[in-house]
Image 1: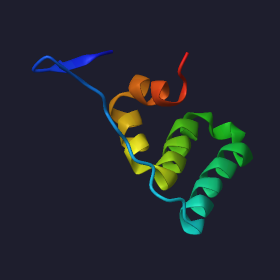
Image 2: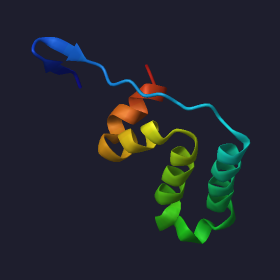
Image 3: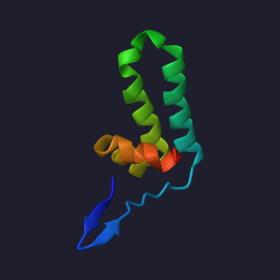
Length: 77
């Protein structure tokens, strides 16, 4: 999807903050929760979002607002 503002293409930019040990630990905790509790499949998206939010809050927010745009940031054809 292309968004034009006054004839100029808008390209969202997101920053991934520096990965600290605390944020990495929180991310890994969320991802291991997904693996440990497979019976809670309805919660997997929320847990994955928590993991994204721990390491890249801008990407998590974009994923909430426009999942396709977030997907395209990391999955170019």
